[in-house]
Length: 374
View 1 (spheres, rainbow, N blue to C red):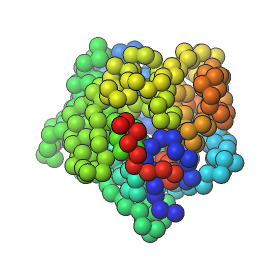
View 2: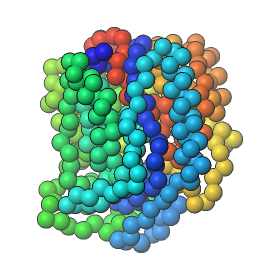
View 3: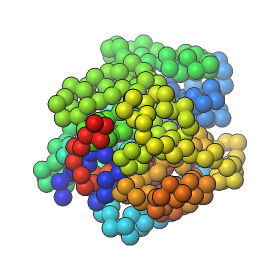
View 4: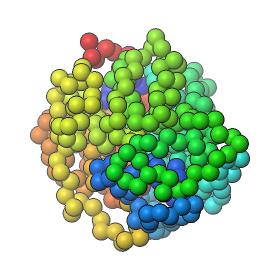
């Protein structure tokens, strides 16, 4: 079937679901530290940060048990989608330990788990966005068998410019301005002959689609360049609306449209960042997550998200939502708003940086380029 997807809630027909198989290591270097920054607590998620430490390259290996349990839960998710008559595609598995080496950096690759992050569908076109974390530089190669199938069926396929990713490619002002140590005290940034200034770096998960309208969260000069590229590329087909500094990058654990006229929000303050047209939509405020909803982790386990990650739900249609069964408060709130909730277990969402929305790239949904804001 040809790609067709314009929003986050129309009936879902086909989807790519990510894989965590062979996730063996995170390189804790400049790009990782800039990305996994906890704005809410003015800190960094990972426990090994030491003020004043420069030039060091740390790494973290998630426990094998957690990776295995992640894949168990993903299989439950895939089964639930199939039972809802959704066709599920999977990426290639990451093959064995290896290293990405470019003229500007080296990194240990990660599997295509959070496939929402680096690809987005605009109508009949899939757009691959440029990575912000070096370890994810070639991650979308694992999606290529699926994307080539869509291409052969007539879908459009575009890749945004791939960044060089020298140390000086990154705008660090957002992190340095969050009452945390300046980025220069985290990792020493070394000039390179390949330096060209700030580069286009923006994730697809900074965008949310509302038919012809798309909101894009922008917090750095890298994002601004990405927004400008998207505006030029989509001109005449989609209307892009900048959301300034709602977060440092992704916004789908802060706000998600569940159907025309209804938003799921982390809290009321999110509304102040949204375009005026969305401020009149009905709001469902996510309940405060209970500490009991999460496994207890050791001090050396790497926490990558806030406890609000369960807000990262997947709409199968305008009435049906897949929700983490370990977040009963959220399930009850959505049911009270009239939604049918499909509970699926997802234990280690804080360790692997994503929920059901992050794990999916919805390639085929019913519907078209509607004007939901008019």
